[in-house]
Length: 149
Image (cartoon, rainbow, N blue to C red; front, side):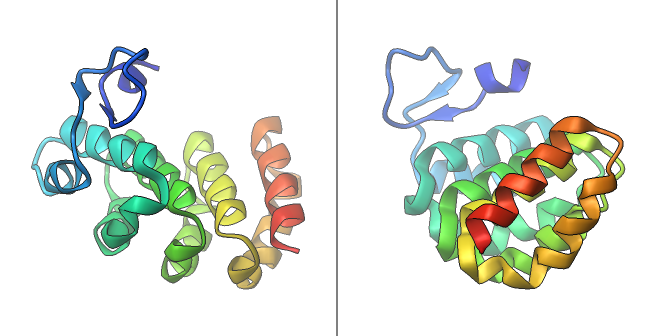
């Protein structure tokens, strides 16, 4: 939850965020930082920009393999917020459904749902999450399948 208070925030001044007013370009630059906290904040900021951050898809995909779970989670969050323009991330997000961290699996499932019908290749992997030990992952996978179909 702490990272939510530390991210970029482009349009809602009612929410006090540490990096309020960061542009897509500023948030993208944060993705290249060596500090995982900065990377996570940059990905969170891009998620707040939604589809306007589509140009960052290529930079977000490698972060799904980060050693830091929060970076992986926020990268998936951003890709889902970008939506259908993140269709090239479907294979990487499908791999992220096997992440050891339930928060990453959940966010990857939600991201695939956010991408929509272009994420059809992920349907078998999402179906396998019906057996996930974490109930929120199971729910996210079910919701994602509904959005994709």
